[in-house]
Image (cartoon, rainbow, N blue to C red; front, side, top):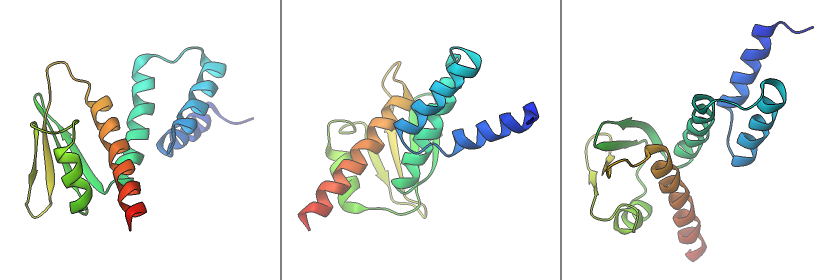
Length: 137
């Protein structure tokens, strides 16, 4: 017998360790088996955990969302990758690099835009550009 609170802590740990969509889907399947269809806030928590993992892979140290903008703080700045992304279709005309002590990218949100989807697309694009640039070398 495992106490209920220990089971929950184990589940929270697994959610925090999500790294791939497959991990996310496995946890969703487990939640459905144990509790039925998860509510939207639970699904959002899983998406945030997956996004956090992707952000770390992209050198992001912090993300701050405000009403009209998102600021992405970078633990290290990959010039070639970010210059591609800033000129690409996802960010062109609505973002800028802030060359501060901690470099950051400022992105203006479009009306009603889902920040999780935008950031997920951005980090996936970052990983794709990084792979393309490494293949060229």
